Length: 520
Image (cartoon, rainbow, N blue to C red; front, side, top):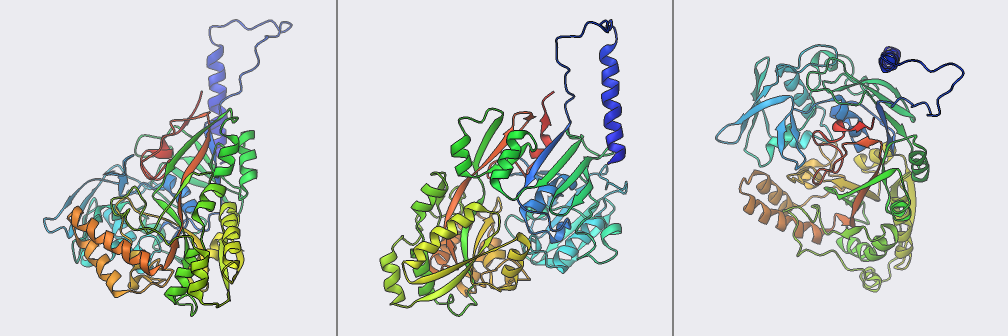
């Protein structure tokens, strides 16, 4: 940080000297009426709603970690604004006629921040780590990896082979590449939580737990350098405190909850609002290994106590829509003919036949809307004879309990892939730690539909299979699918070049946030 700050000071000084050339200095006794122009800081400060638990790309689990990681790494295959694959570390690729082998050609300019080249061996190392460590985010993408057929041809060429062809496999390569010479030593699960060696346009300068993460632009970045010299992330859990920080100019960007948006949209002067329906949705997860919740009649009754209209109107200011399954309404896989259980407290009481019981519902701490939604749901459950205890947990503890299956119910949000594959969320083989089937859903008929769909290359036939899966899941209710919320961001007007990508919003596509700059 010291060297970078010194370089910044030198630049400011040189600019000041250049500005004075060819001008006569004003007499000392005649001050100028014009106020001194404050130099523009070539940096932005972004909000993190929760702390970053790890910077190990293979093991990361939250979007907050991904916000940071997308500056540190270029993916093998990037995504454009329409979420179509475009070159990243791989400048080109070919797919074998049988759809089982992908040959990736790395850009020869690509280097890690320590100056070492990105090689095919690094790609092979990363993919093996994803599979061996059962990466929560990515292991399902490489299900069916043919290890014998996957090999480095030379320093810049790798063939990644699979035992069977699968739709949307190219999206599996939207992953970072770790340097084997760094991550191949030490304890992979412990040594890389607070440090990172990437190949992207920025490097890690500071990580202070619970407070901030600071990134500096790499002077030797191998592609066109981004405009911003420094990216600062501040951890601010409280939405009100974050909005006040934005108004003061202490941060430049934050995701805005609908109540703040409704109150401030007409009077915020130095802020631009951006909104989009992301490939994301909200749910209540049921642990189907729980003796109570494995009963489908109980799950149906609990679902019929959820009042979507009140939630949408009261919490989201009308800026949300009901959903009924694991796809978003704008995706081709979503079947609009499948409807969620109706809000029917009387019908729910009838299903329970006078039974009363208690239920513990986990909520991520600091997420006010999740907490408010849980309180509304808690009151509705009380009306059908169910006593719900709301338990707030920080992100790491919350996710840990879900993965270990040590919970009954939890408010969970999920993101879908551009080309959806719900295999890791619902296939019986994907119960943690193998995947993200945190609800412990096991259904042979659903397994068969997912297996057929992920190998079906014809989009029309695959959509028909996903419509069947949608109907099956809506009937089985391993989750209570609740609403999809229109996500809104507030960005200070000093930040320019801000655009939204289809289904991804402001982030995780190219150039996305890397293309931002500050006004002169």
